[in-house]
Image (cartoon, rainbow, N blue to C red; front, top):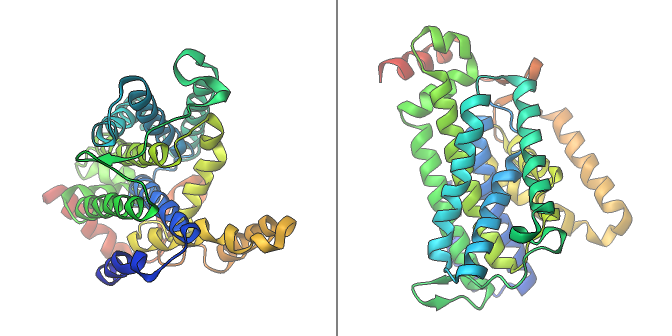
Length: 324
């Protein structure tokens, strides 16, 4: 399925799409990266994060500042933005990931607001509510992108790398440990899994790719301000993971595609479009709470549970995490 989707995305710009359609696909690509990075934290590890937009913002602002003040290109600012976001993810994760459920959610929510308020008030660095304009276009190997087609291929190249990394992690010893933590953290500890270390690792990697997405976004739109990284943005990213299915990579791609394009498809309804959009999400959660392509949903206390896994599958995950 992923291979077919990749081939389809490769030839899609050649189908004569309008500039608006290409822009929509580019935004879908950005949210695929954001969704995959959060899915590693929430879907595969079971840690509810309500502040993922903070890492998105850190990546965007890092890239914007480095490019406008120091003239660095995207090839340099993107990895540096990812590392900056990962650094803050590590700083946040070490003291807070001993928490679980609603407590962790509150801490991540607070962190997201701290980042947004800092961006809003640090006038000398971020220009506050005025934002940072004039961010240069993406340039790679001395070539500056001028069309949406170029941006399209860059963002889906980054999305493919993100998907590959997440896929390899999930299907490795680390991934088995993460899923064991998701199923029952206490049991995983008793079986010898260093749960805090693995959770911090997932949080750091997820933050890194969110920072990469933020870097691309800054160079693509050429202007950023704190209003682009509010709590609503974190909920949008979390909704992608939940709608597509927690712990499902194809589900994240589907969820991003639906949640980015649906508001535009309903634009003709004007004042009613967001109401209909919300009703569709509510109905979806009532009919299929585990998501379109997933078998994981939140249980009591905000802890992720796997509806499809029985005790045999769970015991195998624990055993493999310990013995691999």
